[in-house]
Image 1 (cartoon, rainbow, N blue to C red):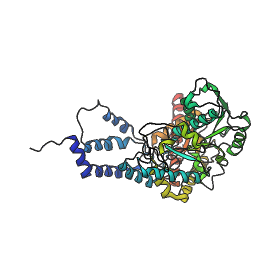
Image 2: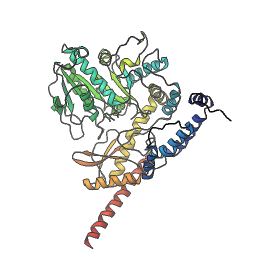
Image 3: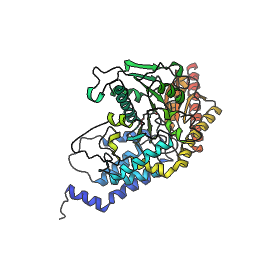
Image 4: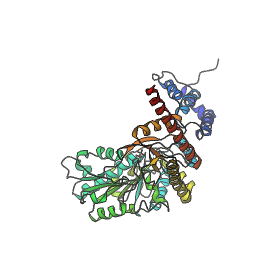
Length: 478
Ligand SMILES: *Cc1c(COP(=O)(O)O)cnc(C)c1O
């Protein structure tokens, strides 16, 4: 009789034989082949089938073959096909092939970029990409970067650095003395600030009640004439890319004012900061280099895999002090980069590998083409929708389009119908007290044909809804 292998022996064998990796690869290829053509949102059946996963913690092991098969059978169909060309929900982003492939390789490396001594390769790539980002966005020479999970955390880091520096100016060391009895810091934010800014402010111990809110204009830009007098106790949060309209604040003028007052400016540029890397669009980000910290995502506009966010800060001491940690076993390098100095985490994934690979493979030209392409598709979307009688409520300065179908009821119903048809996927929002369909063109894979096909889906949805409405009103009379 064959002797039963222990789990430990089984795992060595799996690493050696690689059958399971080949199997995963086959499933992945099958997935990729369909991802660009299949329905964008999973069917109701696929979502129902997720019940398969609902079980108590299993007592005995399952073979990796069966684990992978379960993922492919029940998992793959229940994914949102975000990597294809017709997903326009939230502000998401597809995936550049080089980034995906590099991530596969780096998954085998399983590196921890906390310290140089833990992963020289990650440390080197982080240093190089830090330099590239500084150049692409034209930021000050002394700007440093921390590689985190997304803009939520990047904004948290930027505001933590701001908190450290502003307190320091007021004669208070927040690391030593904490928040109790601290001098007052003023925080000035636009009413159109992203909710993750509010989350960061909350986590940093500033109450919402103390914020100084500033109204935004019709496009969602902070109204500079309403920004209160700034001083050295102030943190001002600006925005490159309003999450609904895609609008950009007037950085140049506002940062001048802030710098004259010695206030700290943080820019939330989750998806919009990339406009600064593109010749034809960088009028939108004019003056960003005069701010003090910037948060931006790789996983949105640049189309790296999730999770990839970056905090950029021109005040190295403030960022490092805000995120500092020590321990007797920590080995910091003198000449090389220790990534954890610039992030809240100690251990983390070496997401830098796919960020580097994406930037290296695209080059400046490729980034230009990718980012400007998103803008062009958004403009096309707006034009074709308008030509078909839909109303576009925002100036399409970047990649966001806000669409109204007339009444709130029609907009809501047509959106629901578009979502159910699964030809494309968009979310909804509220803009200027109106319900809107919110389109975010964020994937390199979106072609002009994808846009036209999606517009057709809007037209068809309107036809169905209006057909239903006249049918019901007809029924009501009979
Ligand atoms: C998406 C987004 C965020 C949050 O970024 P995550 O990467 O999801 O954490 C913050 N601000 C704006 C403007 C965004 O679009």
